[in-house]
Amino acid sequence: MDKIIINGGNPLKGKVTLGGAKNAVLPIMAASLLVDGTTHISRVPDLRDTRTMIKLLELVGGKAHLEGNDLWIDSKHVNKPVAPYDLVKTMRASFYVLGPLLARFGEAKVSLPGGCAWGPRPVDYHLQGLEMLGAKVTLESGYIRAKAKRLKGNHIRFDFPSVGATGNILMAAVTADGTTEIENAAREPEIMQLCQFLNSMGAKISGIGTHKIFIKGVNDLSPCDVSIIPDRIEAGTFLIAGAALGEVTVLEGEPDHLKVLLEKLEQTGANISISGKDICVRKGDVILPVDVETEVFPGYPTDLQAQWIALMTKAESDSVVTDTVYHDRFSHVAELNRFGADIRVLKNVASIKGKADLVGAPVMSTDIRASASLIIGGLMAKGKTEISRVYHIDRGYENIEEKFSSLGADITRLN
Image (tube, rainbow, N blue to C red; front, side, top):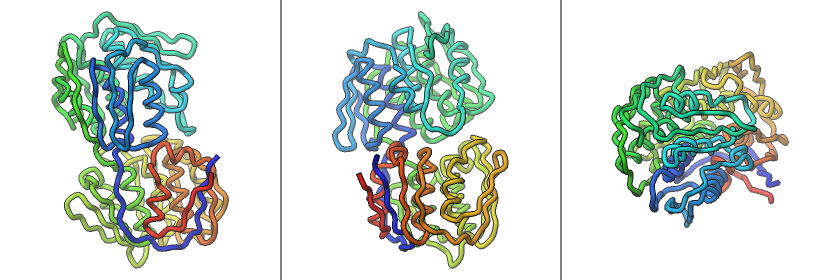
């Protein structure tokens, strides 16, 4: 397996070009299954997860061609509405095909999902929502089987604004009879782009960006082109690294998607400047401790929790990070402590001692965002760090070691 080797302590300075958002492109790729024709998607990040979704689209009968960061998906000959365990177990986002396959074919068989090692993330909201639309949903040998001659619009309320469930129900409801209302819908930018993409295909969705989304069912959809929004989590990762180690500018980002993070970075003493879509962070004289509590958008993202904990190990005093979205997402803590950090976790709260004297160490990736925190930890630490199981990093970051190297980091990949 590949490893990433870091010789820490180098200051960072420079500019980074962001890729398209992983969490936006995957549901849009799934949505291409709704139409008979070719969808062109630009600014597609070349990630393990993107390629996994391409394999899945091909397994159900689609044709996909990725050239650079442009992807063409021809769904004309899709005829096998089955998503097998071997693929779905490696990536939760594969479950996004359930809604569009059911909407197009009246049936779908999709394996229960896998993905990152941290914690259970049940699919109950997805299934309950589809049942509310009139689908008969059963579990057979580890597979979800859903059937409906024609889905019917309904009022669906989520107890929690699940991004995945909101996306799946949106894609299922766009061609249902009547109107569907999703109450307590997710408001993330990636869901907003999915709504806008579906509307470009001919759907009738309103309330985009609010907690109440209305979908008036239509009979026909047509293929269209779309350019993926910048990845706010990649942007946040590099900005946090800049606040720890120097000065970093992310190019062609979306500042409105990062408001809470930018406020928190300023509270640490970092200087933030925005020029159009470009965001620059400069490390302050000291790193002040700032507590963080993750929330659904527009709150602080759970996907930047691990990176923030890494930054806080170098703060002037102690801080606390609470994850209210995923209570057990702290697998990175034990690995950060191998650098010499002093982080303790009780339930969903991490308490971080500041002014840690970090020293390079062999560490292991456990999920996508934990991997990013280990890179930041290794960059801050003295000496050599070796990060194993970096296939997790490749699921969510495109050429991350090359981008950090361009900023002055001493970071390489060993095959």
